[in-house]
Length: 269
Image (cartoon, rainbow, N blue to C red; front, top):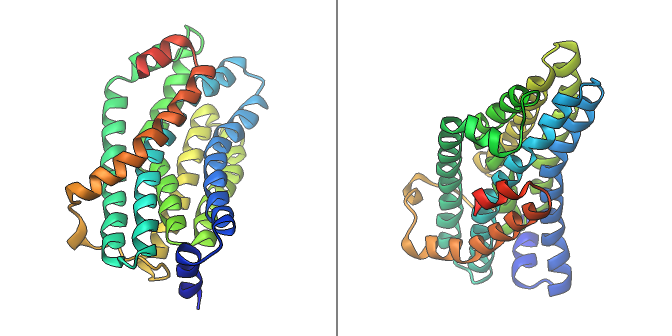
């Protein structure tokens, strides 16, 4: 049975094989999240408008920060889930996956709210000038509005991987990338939405990926069962999630030092 194979990977599989099976999807997930920006950059570049192209590049740190926050919850929760399942503590794993989903929703709402309130300040800190301020603001504003989809897509992929559902974790993320790839030229050129179309395509792509992952939990194809009775995480679960997740998040943020303007990184710190 598939479920038996997934438990085997977590509890009895050869460590080297288990690392490959569970680690590759994590690498793919980070690559896919970065790929969204590169796809947008490619199609915007075809417009031959250097200001809108620059705007997409200015917005890249916002996507990276979103990934970093998602990585904090996803990595922390995934670690506890895998250890819990390996130890036969399925109820703790169910509680943890629910906590991971709840924290992702809360974090995304906070990022969206704070981001939109300080949108002009953020765009200025990203380095946008007179000619690039408006397109950067349009792109970043839409990206921030759909943060729940971006974070949901990335975190849910990690949660699925943590229970050994490697195939499922890849399906959701890759489906979102394909949707973004298809919608980008339609929104940018056919509907003449330019940079706004690229941002909307990115959000819709992440939304499709997140919804696919959610549907797997709802349909019962996963080992774990998120439940409303676990909606309030215990202090022990939160401690475990942040103990492992915060260093992983900081590692992602540190990559911004070589990618962003100095003042952006100082602001993040």
